[in-house]
Amino acid sequence: MRSGAPDSLRTVVVALITNLATALAKLVAALFSHSSAMWAAAFHAFADSGNEVLLLIAQRRSGRPADEQHPLGHGRAAYFWALIASMAVFALGALLSVHQGIEGLLHQEPLLSFRVAYLILAISSVLDGASLIQARGQLRKEARTLDRTFREQLNLGSDPVVRAVFAEDAAALVGNLIAFVGIALHQTTGSAIPDGIAAILVGLLLGFVAFQLAKRNGDILIGGQAAAPLRRKIGMLIAAQPGIVAVSELVVTFIGPRQAWVVARVAIIETIDGAGVEKLVRATETFLRSKSPVIVRVDIVPRGH
Image 1 (cartoon, rainbow, N blue to C red):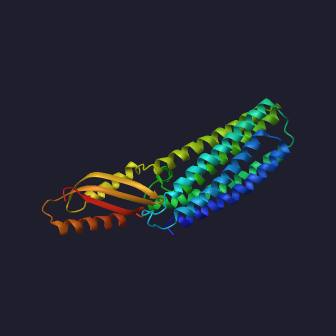
Image 2 (image 1 turned 60 degrees about the horizontal axis):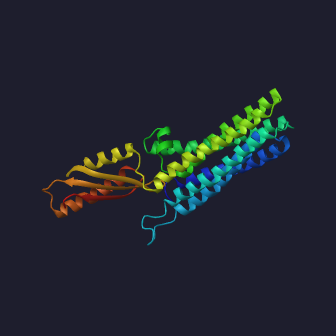
Image 3 (image 1 turned 90 degrees about the horizontal axis):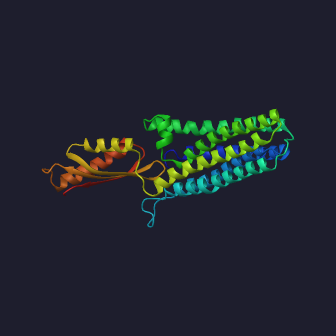
């Protein structure tokens, strides 16, 4: 199994268990309280649970070895399934939440049990926080391995699984707070309008998270390059090799989570013969793979040889 894959699997399993628990609890609370915000929070939790199921599929499919039809392996399956999860499950949860909020505004009903709603939101926040801590721990661990800050790893990391779990758990905590405020205002004012608005805001938050995750996964699927800092670092490492004059072209793409493919066209000192060029190319490829755990394939193309 690839380095980091066990951590990602553990992160998804923890998130799935906590989200299923919070989803069922919020559903019960929504049935008892008739709160639109609580219904939206329940839809959010169920969407997160469905997302985790698809992320488990992504984890399994992307770990299959290379074959004749897939010489680069199946790593990009992770981005495909993560894209499906973000667009289908998250978007569905967002639409249901917004619809519930609109219904709550059009057909205002008094809340029946504030205490149950508050209790479930508090318990859900604890569980969501535990899952968030697990995801954050994995991101911090990977950031240290790659000599990055936490924020850089969150934005630039190639693992769509842990990024999705962290994003959804953070959104769940914010959603819980929005629902709490909406219900509290309903209790204070006697009006169901804040409750309905809170449901709509939860849906919009879920939609925003879905769009951001889908955009990132889509960029990688269509062959988008790795972030500029990583490309610059790789380019400098190649250019520093004895015998290489310049790097005229460099492409760094991800073929899977923590799996970068480097293709570089380089200018080599003209006095080096054919055997020397081949030796230099092999040495450079080996050197790059040894410098970063995410570089799994390197193709150096000498210019003019």
